[in-house]
Length: 453
Image (tube, rainbow, N blue to C red; front, side):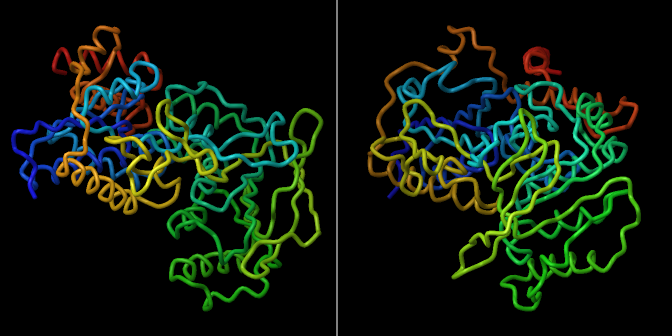
C-alpha cells in the first residue's frame, strides 16, 4: 500500500542527537520509497546538533566522535531542517507541535544522572557523572568551573561513562592539550591535586560493562599506574566468560596484575565486588563505606563485610535517566516516555525513539534499529490514515512571533567553521576549540547564516 502522493506529510522530531537524526533519515527514505512526500523539522534545545556525541563523549575520544561525519551527511542532504536553540516546553509546547505536524517523534535522550540512594549522597564533594561530563565537554548550560580539590576520588560504576570520568580525572592535563577540550576545563584540570582515582563496581571483573577499547586506553595513560587487587580475581576463569570481549578485557587486566607499579605520580585503582553503602563525613565527603559482595543464584548479594576508603570526592556513574516532557505520558520508574515499540500510549501521531524510548542502554547500532522500528510504525499509521491532520500555521511563524532566536543548519556550519578556525590558531594546534557560552554560539550561528559565512 502506498501513501497518497498528494499527502504532504509533516513531521517534527524533538532532539538532534543520533537517535533523532537517524529517525529523520530513515523516515525520509521510508516515505519516499512508499511514494509519499515528507517535510521533517528537527528541533534541538541546544544551538548545535549531535547531542551526546558533542556533549557526552570525552574529548580524547576522536574515534567515537567520527560518527559525526555520517550524521553531518544526513543533515547536509537538505531533507531534514535543523532548528536549534528551541526548547520544547518553553519556546513551544508539545501540543503546539502536534497542532502543526502530522506526527511528532520524541528523541530527547537521557541526560540526568540516575539516583544512587545511599546515606550521605548529597554531601559536598558528591557529584553526578553526567554533570561532570557536561562540564568537561563544554556544555553551554553548566558552570564554567568545577571544584577539583580532592586528592583521593571515587568513581562509582562499571560502565564506559565511569571509565571516561576516571580517565579524565587521572590523566595529566598536558596529554589533553591537543584535544578539543575547552580552555576553561583544561585550566581547571591543571589545578587538580589528584593522586588516586578509585573505580568501584558491584559485580566481579567478569561482569564489567566496559568495552575493550575503553579499558585498554587506561593502560596507555602517561605517568599513571593501574592498580588491581588479586583477591577480586579469585576464581575468575577468563576461558569461562560469556563473550570474546570479556575474555579480552580479563586478559588485559590479568596482564596489569603481573606488572609492578612504576612509581607514577598518579594511580588508577579498579575495585570489584564493592557495593556502595554510605558516603561518610560531616558536611563534605571524607570517606566512603562499601559492602563486599558475591554472586548468589545469579544475583549480587552482600557478604556483611564492610570496608572504608578515605576520599574527598565521589562521582556517581550509575547510569543516565530520562526527563519528562509536558504533555507526554512518562514512566517515572524507568525514566522513559510510556510507549509500545515507539508508539506513545493513547497519543495518536506521537512517537518516541532512542534512550527516551527504551532507556539508556545500547550503542549506536541499537539506536539505528530502534529508530527503524519507530519509523515503520509511523509510516504504517500514515498509510492507514491514523495520523491527525495539522490544523495550525507554520512553526517558524510562531517562533518568529515569540522572538525565539533559533539556529539553522547554515548557522551550525558557520559555528563549526568558526570553531575549526579557532583550533588552527590555538597555541596547542587543535582540530577545533569549542565555543562554550550559549549566547555566543547563537550569535555566531545566526550572523554566520545571514552572511553566508
